[in-house]
Image (cartoon, rainbow, N blue to C red; front, top):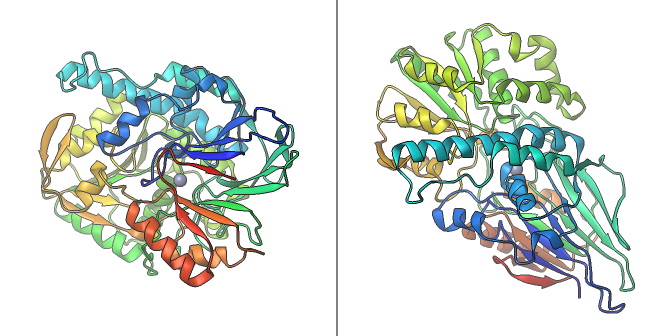
Length: 476
Ligand SMILES: [Zn+2]
């Protein structure tokens, strides 16, 4: 029997990685093996340690990878997979391929920076601390990327096809429909990846990409995300609250630190800050985007106008490229990053990673968390056990680079920026299915969120729903 094995994002929101073995007993043919997504685990040590484990089938025996979108929790393990022997094609949309071409080397770069930092401080129990992969290794894996456009049917192997359709989560994000029609009866599987907000822009202000995933789906097996399976997003406009938070911080002479994914989420925020400055609703203070790929991120963002919402198009038409705005700085070198740390004047710093699990934002937090003048502002989901979640949920002390850091800065969150559909929106999309899938597996959600969504789907739709377990194999 063909099967799916959940190698990640089961009981957690990171490490998305689903192995499909298209084994066909009726012909005795050994099936193709491929991965849907190849994400890195983030958060608690027990999960991060999984990044150092081998795949249950040898990497060199995996024939292909199909990616839903560029976020590292869906792509960040690719360089490791290649390092372990994978040599097949990596299929994704062209925007995802372009984003990965900067995100993966950046991830390697940051892992090297972190390892070097630990080695200098002797703050890791590993001697020497090693990066999971390097900048150069991440660059080498880019040769395997093969862009496939939305809607195009692509053959993976004999009797095995897939197609991307829009998930409206971030630039280039897609769902994957896999069709198997070997000797066995045809089966269709949909892997949602992360699902964007529904099509009402008034309740998802500042949306960058199209709203709402495609409609009228059909699948025998649905593997879907459940990040916000137990939560509803606020429906208020975040701008007044953002203006109030920034203004207060600047008045008391503090710095605003925003941990954010470098592409799209960051640009969304930059446009909002620009708009508020032009309207005189926040003071004109320097805005730093601190990332080795800060400039490329803006360029890729501006290039993909075909995916923008009307609101985003209007903002770009009005204000042009953020790279030309006065008072907005794009800091790519470590020296520039360090200079931000040295400044004692009010400023806004946007830096990744979004859950403060790695990257340059750690240095800013290390320096700014102990001072009550400063503000840490979260605009994205904070997974359990991540540093971001600890700070957001009121921890008084967090560990950064092995050092205990007092949290005295103000902490706030604006959930409206979310790029994930909430429970109500997920159910709205599911109601557009022609027929209920024979089986639905919930992935990419913490235990409580997945369990709550399962109950909600059973009650509202009467579908057969299970929560996927780590390393569980299910027949399809
Ligand atoms: Zn995502």
